[in-house]
Image (cartoon, rainbow, N blue to C red; front, side, top):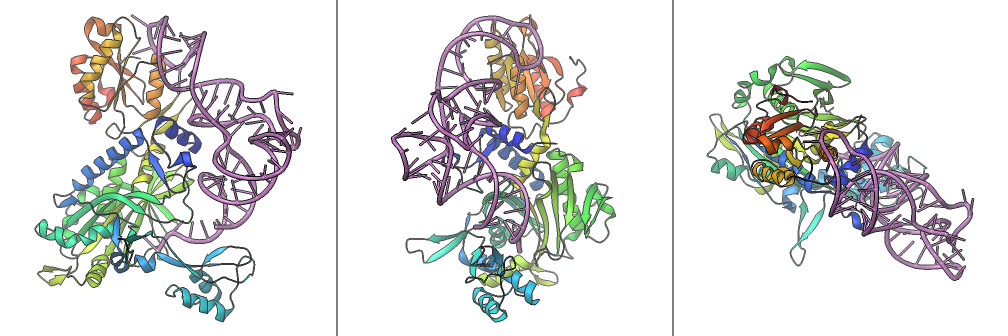
Length: 496
RNA sequence: GCGGUUGUGGUCUAGACUGGUCAGGACCCAAGCUUCCCAAGCUUGUGGCCCGGGUUCGAAUCCCGGCAACCGCACCA
């Protein structure tokens, strides 16, 4: 059981992450990544790109601005859909969503109503506060998007993007041509998104500025699904935990019959990324199907991937897999008056989209939590070597008799190939402890034998076991270990 | 946003009811000594009362406002 205070304290003390602007008292919903956190974040992004862009030669990375013009988000539906009419009780100060109050009291569907209509309806039906019976003030619009004025007069405006996806849709047409009309075509992007959350909470779980890594795959149903069906073998025997309605089951992906194979294939790849690349304990991840009420209307199929957080009170969404149909391109085709259909043997069609959406900060927190361990002796972070901010640390056993200088030489050699750290302060045990805490995967120690025969010890963070190798072969062995080509235990000359 | 609780070096905390002789401890960190493998020891050192206002001769302590965190409610296309 990982304790949230302990993990947060470690993250602050050692340089992973903490609340932004903390010397000014902070601002809810914003976090900074320190030197280790930033490295971890970059490593995560690199491995994400490697894995998902590696799924097909027709998948590529693009970057788009953080600010979108007003019209883009008007067409996408965010200007309307992303905002709610809030009503506030004059007496007790509680706020409610206007449409919810109307629906609850009158049974009428009120989601379509604007501010004035909701105001009228409340007057007409003489609705009062569900908490205290007080009367309501004038309704007000609350939009989750941050609107920004553009240019000196501010006549034009835009929004900080509430998701990275829209920028990708806007580039469908150009990339489809630039990539010479290959389909399925994948466009990935990693970047920040912004939502004016009413109450950002729980560390990096709900932020006002957060990072997303998304892969949008464009395809024509009935024509390109075959591509994914052909790869179905790769995932069909993958055992996953899946929650649908009230029931949670462990099943093989291939045994799920009422979800199309092209969708299951992507569930499988998402799962594989978490278990194989991020090293998650499979017991801590599951898919959950969203109910009709929870799902956005345009999502035809929607499962979230959830991680079981000790620190955040249980199962929480970290990614989503959304089959969005042709909704997005259709909306932008209409809004921009630009043809976004492609020609097929059956005439022009608007491509459909399946979106793999990752909450990067949530992934990072899950990674830290999954890797964080404590026992009576020590705290240590067990995260995959490719992701670890420090892969190797080098120390002299003691500072005298030339060991210090020799350790520095070894450090210089290893630092060319790995993310390497060197330190000399304190006792050897203390240095191991410091490095265990931040997940330095391997500690290389220069001792008196090194001075005789040029051998060093390599210690593994997880087992605390050591092997002795020559300096010449150290790089090669570390590389095999870090690339996961060989396991630490496979080296036979294990010392205590 | 509402209600409750809380805010003291980098981290964790003592002190607050009963205002002054109160800013103390532990760990961490840095420098040095020491040290032949898992947070040993010794010496020295850096660093703090969330922010603003008020009451008072005097505020970490009392009062007001703000900010932040935690819990609950609401919210989370």
